Each structure stands twice: as C-alpha cells, then as structure tokens.
Image (cartoon, rainbow, N blue to C red):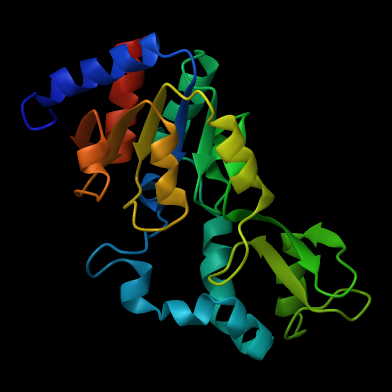
Length: 248
C-alpha cells in the first residue's frame, strides 16, 4: 500500500487510522533521536556499531573489567544526557495529549520522551536517569556515577564499596520490567505507530504482533514492512509532525 500512495495520502491515511483506533501505541527506536544529535546504531558509516564494537557494551564486558567498560561507554552516555527533544518526540507527546496515543514504548535510553512531556512511557531498555549498586542495590542519580568517575573513581562505586552500573539493559542482560509491562499494556492495541527503528532487535521487534494495525515510519526499509498497513519513508521528525497536523 505504501508504494501506491503519495506522501500526502500516506499521512492522511495514518491520521485516519489513529483517529479511528481506540487503543493506540507508539514504538520508537534510535531513529527518532538522530535529529537530536544522537547517532543510531546501524546506519551505514554513521551508526554506532560501525564505529564501536558492540561487544564493549555487554554485561560480560562490564563484569570482566568495569573500569574499561566505563572508559569506552561513559563518554557516549554523557553526550546523550545533553540532548534535547526534537519534533518527533514532541509530536508523539502531542498525539498522547490529543488522546490518540495510549502510550509510548521506546527502545531508547536517552530520556527524550520524558523531556518532551510523554506521560505514559515504557522504557524497555532502561534509562540514564539513575544507576544502582551491584552490592546493596541502592539506586542513585546517574549524575553521581558520572561525577564519581570524573573525580577519578574508576570504576565508580557506591558508598558501600559496590560497583555502580547504569539502569540500562546491556547486551546479555535481562529485559527491564517496563518490557513486560508494555507487553501487557499492548493487549487490545488497535494501531501501533512504529517510528525510527530498524526492527532488527528482539524481543522489541516482536511487539508488532500484538497490534491489529501497524504504521511504520523509517528512513530505510525494515523487516516489518510486509506486516505493516502503511509504510512512510522519511525522517521521523517531519513525518510525525505532519501526522499530528493531519490529525489536528
């Protein structure tokens, strides 16, 4: 269907689907944050995994050498903390405000949906607002992890002496509680608006199966395109802003 309609017709069709759905969700990936200066993972040449070895961000790497783990990963996370929401995040918050989205499920750890004002949010890969102690399980602001590392505590430790780790889902990690809450929330989902994700990471990509209808917004084709009712190629900020306008 996506190849038969013009861009304007696709936007209009997406708006009509959202207005007709009584229980709609959005699923977002790294592509919604690239316009905020945060690189995605798989874009040719610019994606993080073309410049960094993903094995450096595994649970095994953290356990094997936490000091080296932070030297490699903390600069990237500090840059994320300085980012601001873009049109994609604001558009999804606006769709929720309009009553056209029940909630947003995100694979991102950048917290930009929170900054944009989304209220019902499922951060299935965790977030960078807090960290926790591996020994006593105390939760602290992530800023304390950063400040302790900058002060020369490598790896950063809790007051009890335990090593701190971010509240994010690393490779080899268990999924966050938000993932299981999201799967329950998706029961009866009419429309899943998928934006900025390559749909190559499971189990997140499997969430499409919970929705009756699927709209995919992405710059490049995805493995989920055949499952979608509508596929709109383009930058997430522009497409989602235009959908909001069409719903208006």
